[in-house]
Image 1 (tube, rainbow, N blue to C red):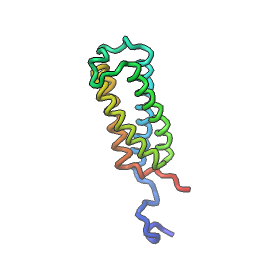
Image 2 (cartoon, rainbow, N blue to C red):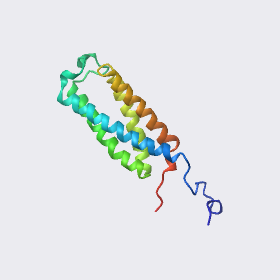
Image 3 (cartoon, rainbow, N blue to C red):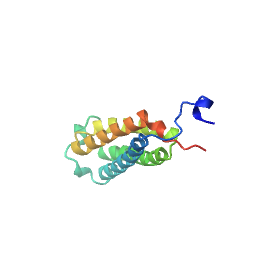
Image 4 (cartoon, helix red, strand yellow):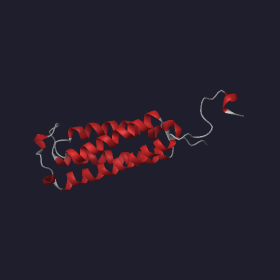
Length: 141
C-alpha cells in the first residue's frame, strides 16, 4: 500500500536533505567534543585564559565554567548518537542543547573569542539542520 493510499504525507524514500541532518548530527558530536575540551581546559588550567573570571559576562570562576562546558559536551555527544539514529527525542534535545551551548559560549566569549565563536557557528548549523530537516532521518520499526 503506498503512502498516498494510507493518507500519510511522509515520503517513502529519503531526500537529499538526509545528508544535512547527518551533517547536523556529526556537527553536534563535534561541538560536544569541543565543549568537552574547553571544559577540561577551564577545569585543569585556570591560567590559560586571558580574561579574569570577573571580566566574563557572567561572573563565575573557570572551574564552574569548565563543569558547565563539560556537562553540555557530554550531553551533546550522547544526543548526537540519537540524532544519527533518527530519534525524535534526540532532535529535540539536540536543538535545546545547541541553543544552550550558543548562549553559554556567548557568555564565555571574552575569555576565548575565536573558540567560542566557532562553537556558536557550529551550534547555529546544528539548530538549522535539526529543526528544518530533522524528520528526514527516521528509522521505521
